[in-house]
Image 1 (tube, rainbow, N blue to C red):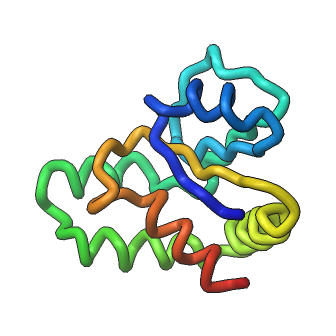
Image 2: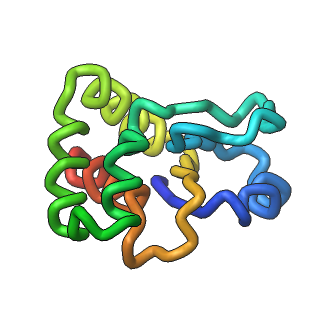
Length: 118
């Protein structure tokens, strides 16, 4: 099953669901994260510049989504998305970012993109 969480809840989920796999979809994740079931997957996170533009208000949420979805069309991202989709059919897979609001979070957009492949 494909799931998502923010970075603040990662430790709790690791304890409750030690068989799950986790994909950290952040450009700059904390370096102390080094568990076997956690994979760094910065290719699926938006570029720093796009995040900065959104946070400063020079790009709207709709503009952010359009640019982010365009980024996800590149072959590397497409292959990673397929791998995660397949893996999520076998066991729980979490997409993890540092967004604390699900209303405006790219990991929710990524989850939707992956769910649409199934």
